[in-house]
Image 1 (cartoon, helix red, strand yellow):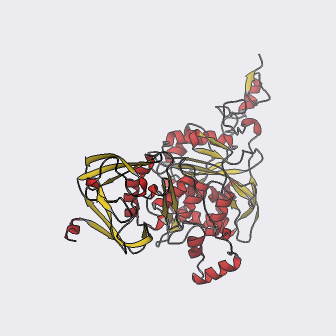
Image 2 (image 1 turned 60 degrees about the horizontal axis):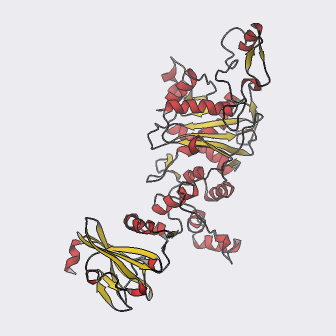
Image 3 (image 1 turned 120 degrees about the vertical axis):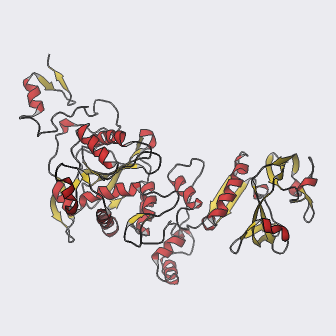
Length: 521
């Protein structure tokens, strides 16, 4: 055991390892360095595999017989009838791993692919310590991927977020990992489990619904209060579906076609566009406040603010030039300025707290001034429409995934859980879109027909409806006869003494069926 002093040992109390006599306990994993290694390649019935090990690694050639790797030769047969097809001495600085003290027989199966026709199964992956699974993953994946037909199956109950199992599952669920297929088994699919079983299990878990959803509900929940409860998150997953149209190289997803008779709002979160946080635009259909629907979502982490403003202008014309709710802080100001000055898009909500208005007394600034109080107010508003009233339908599974990891911190702030692979850009886009229904804002930008018992809008309608001749909604977003004109004639009624169209008509111009202007000559 003196030699073990130069190795790093991770003790094991939770896992067993597969041996020829079944699963056995083991004391831990040894990680060390050895420049001298041997590559052994095996073949049996057209199945090929390989292993890199130290020269004195024991390779079984029978049920209870072994040889050191350095003493094996090409064409030797090892256990299970595998024939050595290549042996090569290599030198590198890669770490070596060894299992410490397998109980009872001191044997284990180092490569399960030899027994499973090249299928590796990792059970309870989310509960394996992250430093172990990352090292294991980096060493195993090159071997597995080097053979055709190999499969990796990862099975686990959720264990929070930010771990490798959460990353692989959620990215597969979003369709970003084409080589992975995700499946889930819900508790009610298991025979003998019904409402009575759930009640009994809830009692065993001290009545904690969150604990039940973590263990049996397939929810990646985190410590701390979640913005949306687990039952609603599961509902969103049930109604999630592929978009009807996907545009802009996959960044722009549309679940419902634009309807000229409907009322929309767009919540916008702006990033720098340098590959980290993303710029997001969430389109909500708020025609019926008892049935608010996610109609579209744009998400792009490499678009700069100037080009994002151009996209928002195009998107706005597609959805009937709705009000945009844009966080003005940081890069959001650039987007708002470009929308106003370059694209003449004026339907931008202005919300500045009274304490901050003194900083804006010399010039007009549109957008939402975001700080801890307004964000908290926005979260409370979002939770009212989603958690309390349950009138919001989310079809984008990526938005649902971000809602799972959007939690309340001890200091009262709401944001994403810290860690890798976790984001909240889609959540803030959704939050600002629903902020249009905050009573103070709704009364300013819409006609509130009636209120509910909490003083929130119950029914709203547009105050000013632009005539359809000024734009055409184009579901395909193509440059056809239904696409909006590059210059929006007649939209800005405050400029000039009379309508631009009236002026043009006096000069001999006339309108055609597609609302484009042409000469009568």
